[in-house]
Length: 119
Image (cartoon, rainbow, N blue to C red; front, side, top):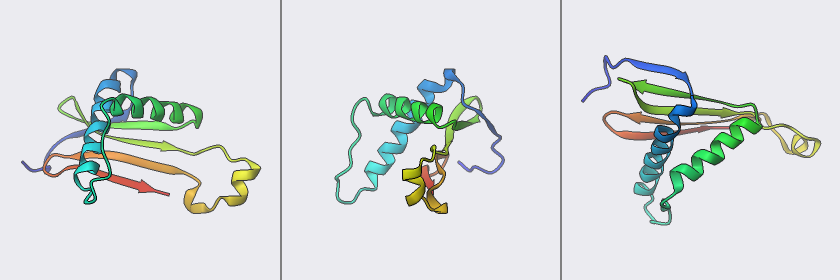
């Protein structure tokens, strides 16, 4: 199957996306586990829900945002962005490269999930 011509709808995360978002996080972690040559990484049973809860909490605490990508009404990816609050302590160690944190999980219809972290 090819991604060419696939219509992707990008929109803000809604509470009703939680189960699908959690599933995406599990798929992402499964992919990370699969590429761990040392086999040190594993996905715990409740990882998806636990990670989703922590992510939603960080987004709420840091005035962040989540966008999701849909294909044919099914969630296939997500982008999460936060800008942590700066204090005098963190500001003294802060550089431009780590002021904001952005991560995403994109599900490629051919190759599986991809990870991108920018600092």
